[in-house]
Structure formats: structure tokens, C-alpha cells
Amino acid sequence: MNDNITNSIRKFILHFILVTEVVGFTLTIGIAIVFFTTFLEMDSDQLKIAIRITLTTAVFTLMFAIFSDTCRLRPIHKYLFMLEKGITDKQISLNAQKSIFRIPFFHSIDIGLRILVTAFVVIYLLSQFIILETADYYNLGSLTLIMCLLVGVYTFFASEQLTFNLIKSGVFDHINISSLTKVRLTRSLTITFIFIVFVLAITVSGLVFKLNYSGIRKSYFNQMNNMNETLSIFTESIFEEVRSDSEKLKSDPFLFL
Image (cartoon, rainbow, N blue to C red):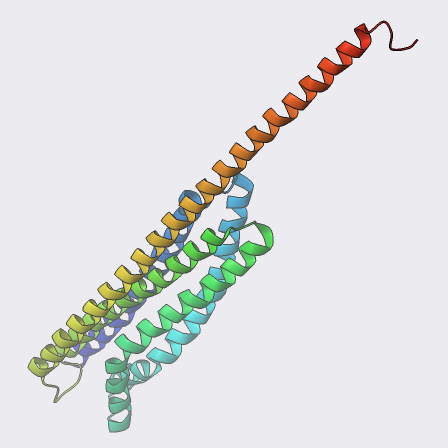
């Protein structure tokens, strides 16, 4: 029985790291690089700088993630060690249960904040090497918020499913699975609704800003082009008048008498 439980815990820890951390990092960095390539007007050198900044910052974020996950999983590791040694300790078991129930919420918040802080650092470093327009800052900020919500909600649901499977495997005694399922469904529906509302709000706001900014920018450049053409015509007319007067003066035989 203990072997099945210890195997379930090891499987949970492995899947926890792969499904939440590895997938979250890959998704975030991949979308950031695609955004740099598609939406920001960068040449090849600037794009290389942006990718290097992103990857370098991600390394420090990964180091913090390892520390954070180690602290978060410590009670579960202690519980696993206790089971392997055949020791009975109610406090260790209680701490492990509390840690399991807290993982979905706190881990999703942790990952969302990591993305937020990392993105602000990347945006600041980009501004030191690349000239960014107001629309670029707004788009980067919108992308950051959407990624925080997207990866955070994904992490919550993935962690919740992993913890539910662990509890259902019989790792802890005296836990009512049916009541836990009802709580999961209620919480999932609430979070899904809030996520959809926030993403729609950010997306609509970003589209409105982009359309307004593009319209104002296009109007400004059109006015500048019209003004440039007007000045060119005006300058050319003055030049023609001066040249005409000059020709008349040159052909006047009494000018130097």
C-alpha cells in the first residue's frame, strides 16, 4: 500500500514540474519571441538583442522558480520521506495535506507574478537598446497581462487536476472526494468566468488603442506629406518667379547703363 502511495507522490512531483513549470516557461518565452518577430518593427540585430534579453532574464526567473517550488513541495517531500521510513507523524501528514490544497491557488499566483516581474524587466532593458513607440509599450503591457492571466489560469487548472488525482489515489485518509469535486467545479466555473471577462476587456482595450493610434499616426503622416508637397510647390513657384525676373534683368540692355 505504501509503495503505491509513494509512487503516486513521486509521479505527482514529476508531473507538477513538467506540466506547470516546463510548459509555462516554454509557452511564455515562445509567445514573447513570436510577438517580437511579428508585432515589433525590429531589424535582425535588434531582434537578436530582444531574444538574448528575454532568455537571460528567463534564466534568473528559472532560478527563483526552482527555489519557490522547493519551498512549496518541502512538506510533501517530508511526507514522502516519512512514508518510506515507515514513520507515523500526524503533524507532517497535516502539513502535507495543507500544502496540497494550497498548491493550485498559490502556485498560479506565483507564476503570474513571475511573468509580470520578468516582463517589466525585459521591457525596461529593451527600452535601453531599442527605440520603442508608445503603441509598443501598450502592446507589450497588454501582452504581459494576458500572459499572466493565461498561464496563471492554466497553472491553476493543471495543478488542481494533479492534486485531485493525488488525493483520489488514497494518499490521505478521511478526505471526502465527492465534496471536493463539487468545490472544484464551483471554483473552476468562477475562475473561468473571471478569466474570460478580463481577457476580453484587455483585448478590446488593446484593439481600440491600436486602431486609434494607427488612425492618428496615419492622419499625422498624411498631413505632413500634404504640407511637404505644398511647401515644395510654393518653393518651386518662388524659384520660377526669381528665375523669370533674373532672365528679364539679364535681357534688359539698359540695366548697367
